[in-house]
Amino acid sequence: MTGTAASRPRVICHMMASVDGRILTDGWPQSDEGRRQYEVVHESYEPDAWLCGRVTMEAHFAQGTRSDAEIAREHDGAPREDFRAPGERESFAFAVDSSGRLAWDTNDIDGDHVVAILSERVSDEYLAFLRERGVSYLLAGAREVDLALALEKIGSRFGVRKLMLEGGGKINGGMLRAGLVDEVSVLLAPVVDGRMGTPALFDFTEDDTPRYRLALDSVERRADDVLWLRYRVEPR
Image (cartoon, rainbow, N blue to C red; front, side):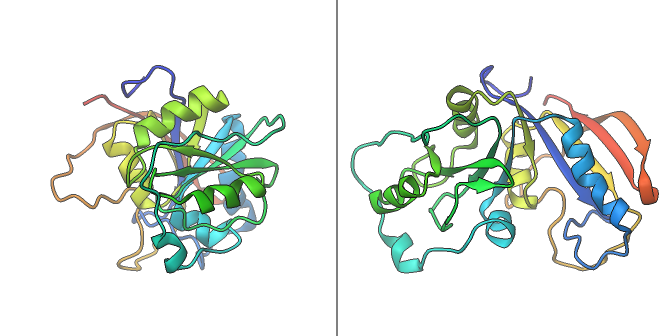
């Protein structure tokens, strides 16, 4: 398993992409059955949880965001404990949200329990807000989320053994750069997107990011000429 912590879950980066590597699927000329392959393949892994970054969660799942003034109120005291909301859950949706920007009205996404992954800088007020709504949270990293630590906690606190990484290019790239991705599952849609400046499967903010070699495990043709490609991430 890639990474330094044996306790962390196996991470599968699962995405749908155009032939030119874009991942914003709105407006693509696909059939409903073609689009449905994403969820069908997701379910075939029988994962315990899935994870997205803040931007994806804000766009598709969270009920709002906090104001800049609220986010600016930061904690600078002693470390605080993680929080697991009462109740038994079998599946989880993890939201990487360093500054605590997301405002949740519910602790559930289609039956998956919401868990916020935060940095230590978020205020006590925000943590109380999450507890009141029954949203669990993990604290990992001083000002930005320490992804390796977050994965260790996901494994130890919630018992997650198989995690689907389904974020945007930035969080996917950050996880890959940190050596935390074990498999890449790509549904290649028969589409050329062509929109410059839109997210790709993996985006890196650092100019010195190394290139990564993947080992092809399988190729499968699915509905509407979608190709399912499975790769192992080779250790560096």
